[in-house]
Length: 235
Ligand SMILES: Nc1nc2c(c(=O)[nH]1)N[C@H]1C(S)=C(S)[C@@H](COP(=O)(O)O)O[C@H]1N2
Ligand SMILES: [Mo]
Image 1 (cartoon, helix red, strand yellow):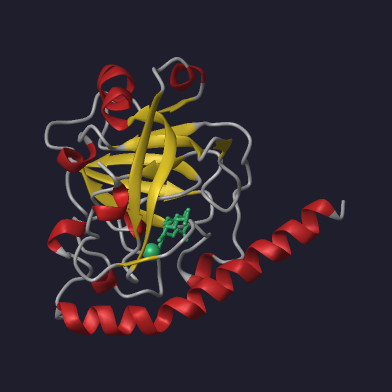
Image 2 (cartoon, rainbow, N blue to C red; image 1 turned 180 degrees about the vertical axis):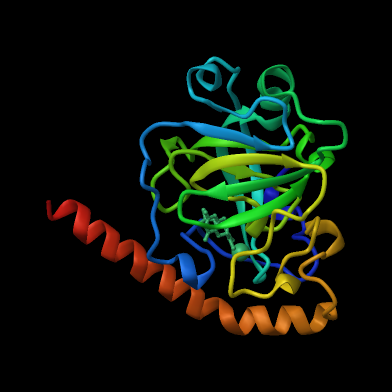
């Protein structure tokens, strides 16, 4: 389908490029190991483990999908490649980590300290990737090196970058949205099509607040990346 005629989801406007974005707290936090993938699998599992070589052997997929940030900007037609979450779950998590019955509350932790949860059933959708590449390049520190989640049906904040660990829990006891940000910013599913931006607040208010905050967050993230790049090219 020609994307120019595909309407954006409710409350979103088109932004011309995928720029580094996120919560201000993480603007100057970066991955400590950006060049090789290693994922800790933990939580209510019989056998917690860390995978690297096993992950490298999974089949790779490419997909083109639109990216929707909760602050109302969307970037169309982002080309990702990586491993389907469902392959990772079926070929690594189930046989090797052996999650307990009902461990369907999944927490992703980033190397920068960011964390967000997803429901297992949402992660098993065919368009959910653990991505290593974007638009023909390996992920850089801007977009989540070495590995990030891509779940196009869910707002950007669920798409955790710089993945360090993936935890499978039976309940949400071991998780909170990064402090000091309020829990109400974190909808348990955050589906774009249903405009599940946040909890409790009316949609019109959430749009208004986020739209106002967006330029500040963008500026902060840009500045953070510039500082990182200056430090790492100066060496
Ligand atoms: N580790 C980590 N993942 C994160 C964030 C972050 O600050 N740290 N920000 C989230 C938000 S709010 C958005 S919109 C997307 C932005 O992805 P991008 O920087 O590749 O555009 O990453 C999400 N994943
Ligand atoms: Mo976002």
